[in-house]
Length: 113
Image (cartoon, rainbow, N blue to C red; front, top):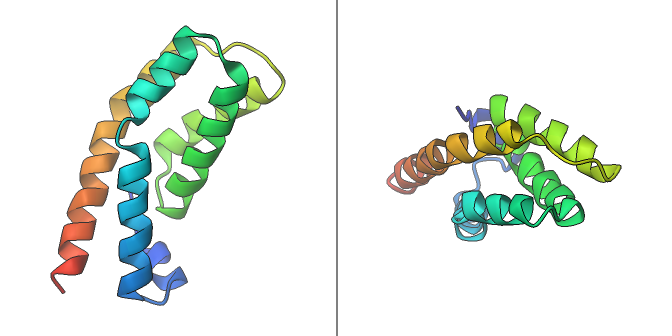
């Protein structure tokens, strides 16, 4: 679950900036589950590190606490070249569609204000 309260405060409720960032997130990570699964199947730990680090950072900024913790674990393991347990990938892939939907809803509500 995301909580954009602090994110909105950080951007001083600047609707233009918020819209750009949320839209960019949705554009960039629309296929995040597929990307993560593909990287995992290829055992491309370096790319998983970069991807999980970037995604985690955004989710933390969006006030998301559960999936960002899983991504932090993925990030830590892959940073040192260790393989990742598939259940961590599965948990992340299961959570991302709900996060995307929440962000889309927040964006829609914010834009109608």
